[in-house]
Length: 104
Ligand code: FES
Image: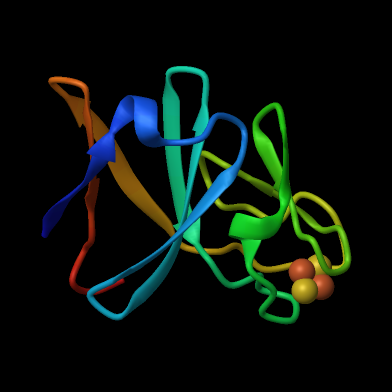
């Protein structure tokens, strides 16, 4: 399912935006012209990654500092060891869309 989110210029740069869509908690990130979406639940102890700080291509969990790749959801530093889900994001005519795979 592809869901319209918002015009590009309404998405804060280098910060997370928390979304609740179709029962999924999602953290949407913008880094310049690139957009990423991760499950908004740290795989270590469930903190909100949307509240984390963005460093280049990673977000740092606000609770214990594990870093996750924005593009692949992989846990890059301890204490997290498991990845978080990723969602596909695309931009059409200046509007951001997010695709939710029904099975994710
Ligand atoms: S809750 Fe995210 S690193 Fe612990």
